[in-house]
Length: 158
Image 1 (cartoon, helix red, strand yellow):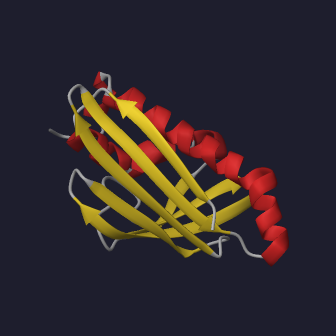
Image 2 (cartoon, helix red, strand yellow):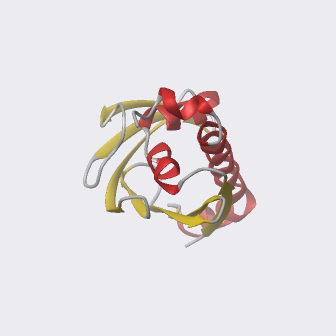
C-alpha cells in the first residue's frame, strides 16, 4: 500500500493548526479548483471523532464521491480519517500536530490502495502518488496561509 509522508512547518500554535485542519470550510477552500463540496454528513464547521463527511469533487475527469469517517482523535495532537465509501480499495489519512518553539510541525501520513490489482498498482506509481501529493501540498499551503495570518479568525471563534 503506497504511503505519502509530508511534513509542513506552520508558524502558528498547534491548537489553531489542528482546528483548521479539520474545518470543513477550509478544506473546501483548499480544493476549490476541483469544485469540492461537502454534500452529506458534517457539512460545516469542525468535524469531530466518529463523524463522517461525504465530499463530491471532480478528479481525473470524473465527478467522484468520497465518504470519510474520523476514526481517531486526540485534541490538538492528531486525528485520522478513513474512507468509508469511495473509489479507493482502502484509504487512511493520519494527521499529526507537533508543537515546536516557533510554531507547529504538521505531519501527514496518507496510505491508500487502488482497486484493479496490478493495473491499479501501476497507476499508483505512474500517476496517482504524485497527484495525491499535490492535493495534500495544496491543502497544507491553504492551512498555512490561514494559520499564519488573521484569516483563521474568520473560521474559528477563539
